[in-house]
Image 1 (cartoon, rainbow, N blue to C red):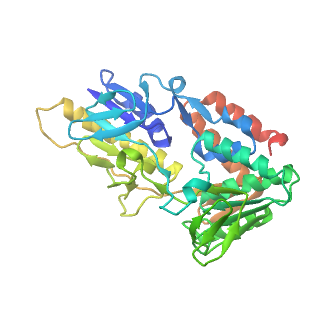
Image 2: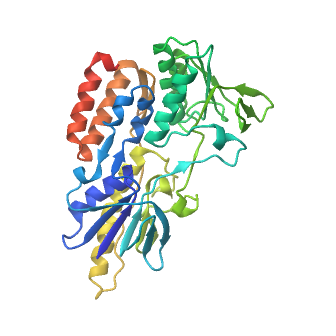
Image 3: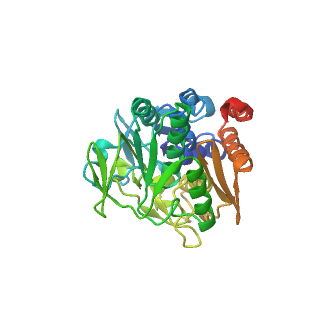
Length: 380
């Protein structure tokens, strides 16, 4: 039998490492990704200000996998009836598949936004944002606009404001957000703390500001106002992967698209056992992967034992977040239960979570390096 995991983000890598332990030894396991490396996405914004961190947040897949084969290629089409994955180079046949291709940046068809804004999804994006920022920060009173005040937008705005301070540039960094608050999908006390941290970082926040279009000079709002910019960064939403034609199919708490295909992480809209739509986040993806590993293994075992014809019992996924974390320049905001932390406590918690994740995916040397850097005052 052959199990394929498509995508090596948080869900895909966690799932593959779990399947290495849980699948029978004679089952072939392949992890497919367009890159031979795993990117620690929640630290990507830091590369805008600290490009030397790129190496630390890039983890070689062969180095952290024990038995899974790594296939580098872009997933172009998935034929679930024939169980064939078409890649940019060749194809793969499978018996059971898990689709963990992550999400892409959504531009919602807004005129000029795709053409004039830089997203933040890959290392190349972070370097493009950094290089453009260094250009404009050398000008008089540069204006940087970030579209979207979700966690990604908050983090990149904080980094850009901190970079401007380090360069002693009198820059204006503005976030435009269509909803009435920053971090709009999070609890009110977390929203307030994030708004305060942005204010302390010198980031201007424009809420109730829905983007209608953009050109090479300004972002135009539905209200008729325009927000001029010298640099425009877009973090305004996500869509599904190209293999799903931009859609994020809905899966129930067993994470199955069909009897032999699973979808999890940001690639899918997951409705958990409590009937709640699970937020697209790293922590949700990692937890879904643990449930998926159990269910994939049960499907494999049932398929190998065809005599009884009994449908395997699936484990249900429920999501209850212990809290949320976000960086804002040199500051951080953390929510743990009902409590909100800022400053050193939040930064220490964020560092602990990050190091814990790296250790969990086998990148122990990188985890030790991150812990060392976090304790070094030069990196604060």
